Image (cartoon, rainbow, N blue to C red; front, side, top):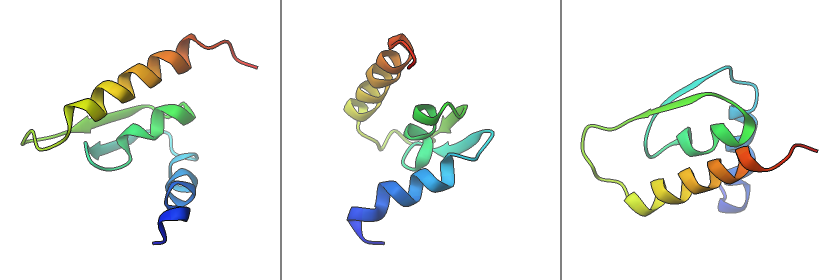
Length: 68
């Protein structure tokens, strides 16, 4: 997959979903931006905690933002 199309392709997969269950490394951060309920799992803490903090902050901002 070409990097410049990565987000576009992932978004087209996630948008029509009614829910997403993924490991922490995959689509779990993208789903909430489309209003798709998401739950993420991990068995080893081998992800960047800073990514989780950034995502939580972004989700809070998206929820607090008035809809257009």
